[in-house]
Image 1: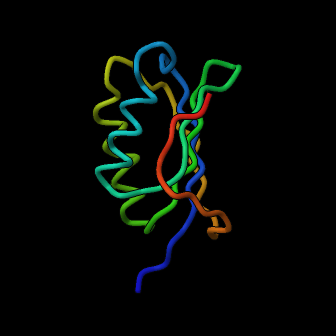
Image 2: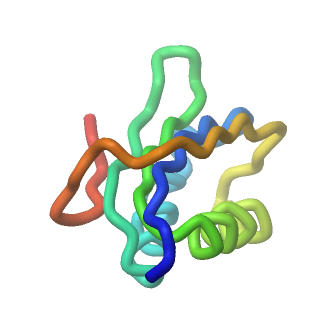
Length: 93
């Protein structure tokens, strides 16, 4: 069985007010990931996703390639050992 890891990523750019979170949620659900996406006060968007590292890497690439109506200037990503559990992937407010 493949190892389940946790991905914490912050997308910086034109990512708020452009349905970016909804877009991220759709990718996550397609890939059967759990976790959340939320806007941060500085204008960036935070994602915490849980799944196999290979799938999580595919997830980031898919978002980078098609950021919806938004645009990404930079991405800060960090993979760690998974210590959390979610039932689904949700948009947090």
